[in-house]
Length: 225
Image 1 (tube, helix red, strand yellow):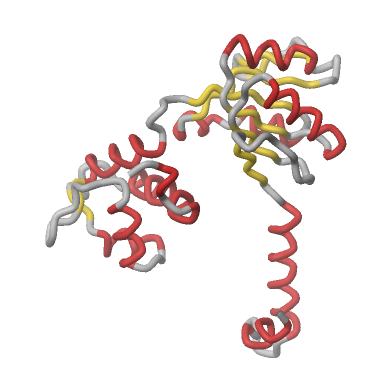
Image 2 (cartoon, helix red, strand yellow):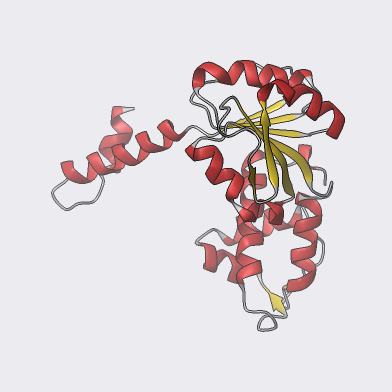
């Protein structure tokens, strides 16, 4: 099954399964069942079975899935195109943390270079990746056939950077700036909205404070909606 035939929620769960399976002690589980995966992750067994059926046919009744084969099938489905050629725009605190994170390669993402407007940063390297001036962004993306652009810039600069990326042929934008972007229909924009996540956390804590037993009143919360 192709990625565009699978729901967004399923696609978001598949890396969760892969992470869990990779962390299992090597050799301890030659086979693993959907029941065991569901129990380990706190998910429903039917959901796990349905999700895995979209990417593998290696499961057998009573024996489950060969662990190594299941990991391979998940990796092949999620990262079939190999390492995605990626650039990062914005090397502030968040951008530097993203640039320094070594785990992206496990998920098929290779940051080739970073870009910034700060002359004090331009010319430096982080783990072998150069920090280049933003003026070189379009030419670099065209020359290196960059596929993904990560934006960790202030809101005021985000749309201009997005335009530079998409104009240079970038096919997907991972946006950490607190602003919604306009992009061509062919381009996927994945928005990471930290404010929305914090609002959910704050609302949860507010509910805890308002209930005498410290358990959120879900019925009251639902009624307010």
